[in-house]
Length: 125
Image (tube, rainbow, N blue to C red; front, side, top):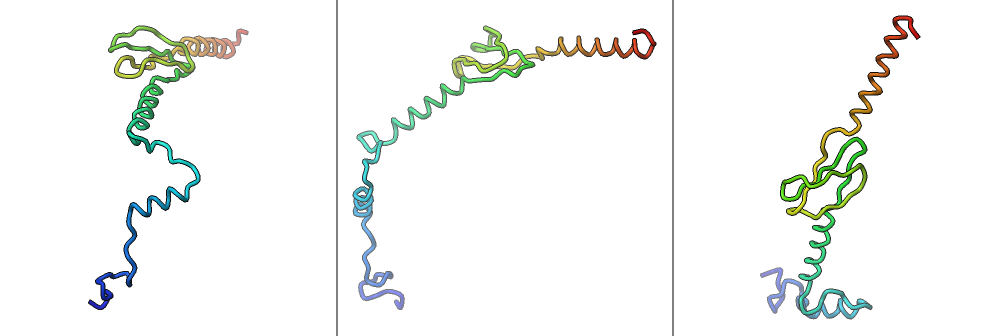
């Protein structure tokens, strides 16, 4: 064919690079040892990363106007106050935000405002 040389190589007489040779050249060019290249490769690293992510999934935040409920296997075991908290990751524990803890205070303030507005409208101070 017109695009091949005498050896049948389309790259004009150059041999295609050997993968092992290329890897060895890269290893020699890097001044430090590549981590995780041991006997087991990346499998232990992946397992450790997944374990850390699973443990981190137990972190949760309760909003200021909520009450957190921690459930163990679906049964409520404790309530938590607003702020950051931790529980055992799924499937052991789970977290749900319940209700509106600030609703009682807001209702009290709204009632006070209504009463004050009525007094002002009626002329009684």
